[in-house]
Length: 154
Image 1: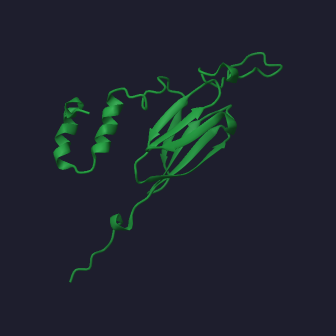
Image 2: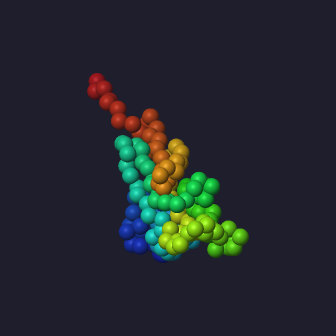
Image 3: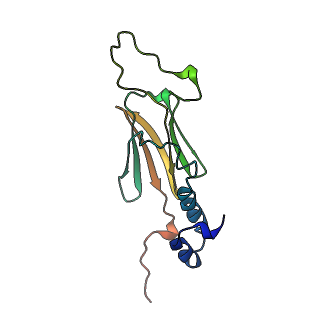
């Protein structure tokens, strides 16, 4: 990685930051069109990022028509991946068969892959698919040393 590839704001911030190299690398990968961030040029599936408390968040992914067996959620190296097992363009045997009596098929289960970057201090608490909405719960872990405390003045 070369520092010159980064936008000037990052170059200006580097001398004043220690331990944030992975953050700068993350943004560089995003700006370079890295595969992690350009896995799906379509805006599918739609999703919400919701702050549910001081240190809790939900990622809500709209997956109408998908079953639990149709999707996967994985986490590795700070990357949370949500994707489909159906409609995978590399697997022709996995094509969805129309139900008997279907006159028009307007709701398609199609292949998708979404990647979210998760900070080091955020923990994945769980995932639930209910009523076509996949909810992934996250919690920011704040160490005791970083929590607010009152210092007694002597």
